[in-house]
Length: 310
Image 1 (cartoon, one colour):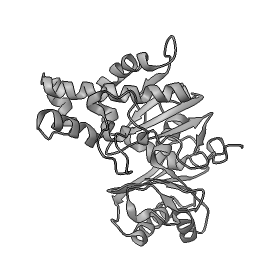
Image 2 (image 1 turned 90 degrees about the vertical axis):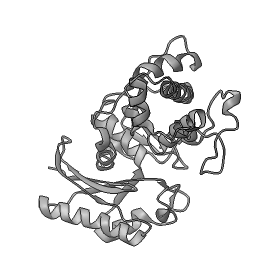
Image 3 (image 1 turned 120 degrees about the vertical axis):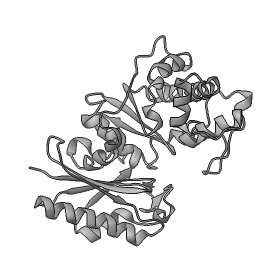
Image 4 (image 1 turned 135 degrees about the vertical axis):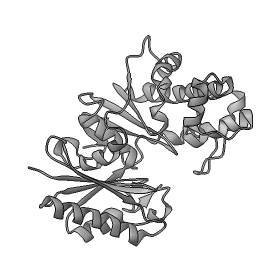
């Protein structure tokens, strides 16, 4: 029986999962993530693998989901909001610690791969897996293969400008990438909270906003409506370019039930088609999808596609 180990390196917690050939969970552990210390991060990852293998009595393949990506140009981590990872050779250094190859991919890519492999989008030929949380990101899986692209940024729709903006949406909020009005600044959890505060003067975050709206608060409902409209426009561009069979919504905001009714209705006028058959689904594996996707980085049917000519 093949043992697949997946690690999810998050800002607050690091998780390991062990899967068998059928995707059954053999082991799952979590521990707090080291902060601002690259060496301690490597120690944490290596210890989780060593302890899991000792408990299960055999070695496995190792995949890692992380914020950011490995640059094909330099081999170093880039675009990670856990800034101490940037400029490091994470895959090489962890492989050296463990004495075997390690595959590393963006956490949104791993989420998409998980749901395309044995999740809500299993069997679909093209999947766009969206993370809506503290940040916004996405991964693309085509015919079971994770698409990274020559720049390792496939799915980074979060740093395109909000499509078809109204006058009140231009130039948009400042984004950490240095630009203004990126999708992330509107559609993330902090983006939703900032928009509500701008409109009402009240600092309320996503879950509380949803509860207020469900209780009949008109201002909270208006903020959720603006958020859904903006998200629908952003996803309409994805459909126009990629035309995926399935879009999966993950992250904290992806759990808001109204989005699954509202988005297909709202994106239709912006999609260049007589009708839109793209399915919008909730993730089957919830917050386990990132770590499961890391474990699935190794099967031949889910090989990372990094060469656009391959």
